[in-house]
Image 1 (cartoon, rainbow, N blue to C red):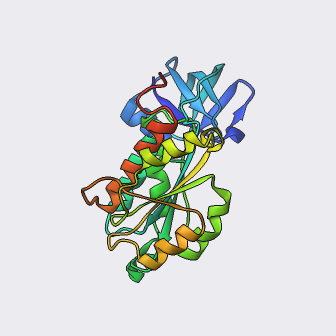
Image 2 (image 1 turned 135 degrees about the vertical axis):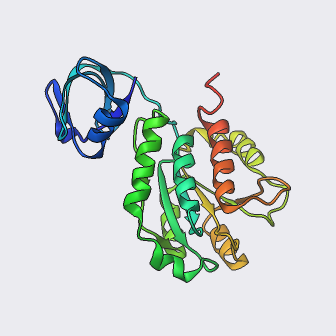
Length: 253
């Protein structure tokens, strides 16, 4: 069954409206016709079972049949502070990070980020579209947000709003995410952790001075193993480990 997102403002009683790019996709690519059932999300996590009432080139009308009690979101919110990468790597980071359950992508300007990238980073609309399409494909209940780039000092300010900040670092000693989670469990602090930040450096890595400043703000510096991972891979691995240890990746049992 196909799934679509439409703003709650376009849901009125038992009728919802789909407009924009999805309309062409519905009638030209998916070839959905009247009477077919679909899942509809109001962009705030509320989902409905619906039946297509009509399809035109301007809009698709959906009859709301019932509200669904489904929630495919992780019980932890993960915020990825991603050092700005080159070329099209951010596209991949947003797509796969959405599949893995990231709540928000926050492009970050660090010392080793190529300054030209900041000026070139004007594709938020496209990245948010990638997040939308990945959310549909992976049956997410919310659409992750791709934010405007921020600088390193702004990251330090945001740490206070997080329950935990993890920083993968190639020069970290033998202290990984698994060890960190075990220590938090021993301290009985694990149940209070709901908002988690992951800070990943750009291709050039993270300056030692930046690491020290993150430590001073309470960040946990961890290793992801013996092998050096690319910037686009490090966020996926860290997110997967967090989702496995604290949430639903791999199943709930």
